[in-house]
Length: 153
Image (cartoon, rainbow, N blue to C red):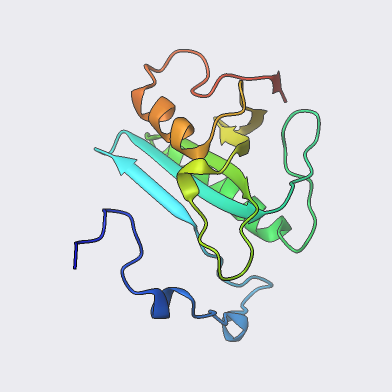
């Protein structure tokens, strides 16, 4: 049996368990999950969220509240902005997928719908996949926008 690749789920039985956070409701909020997070040497941080289907966006690239995700998107906005204000360059990418239940989501192939950077939402230039976005952000030199922009807020 070969060793799993770094980043692959090694225990599918545990990864498919549904987490019930309803008993943790305090002050109107419950915990949320984060689909992906990468940090590089305390200098850059990247958060990834993968959503099924199409995501409705404003003209500037901000996700439209709906389908019960408003609190999660607000939490990601605040987290990304706070990490950036704390001194790490931070980006949050929101991606879409079409995997049906029982089918794996191949994260690096998921298209980036929009991204959060320096307190604003943007539409990426050139419709990158999550894999391309991660590489572009990692290699980004700090000038301009890490994923380019089609339209700014």
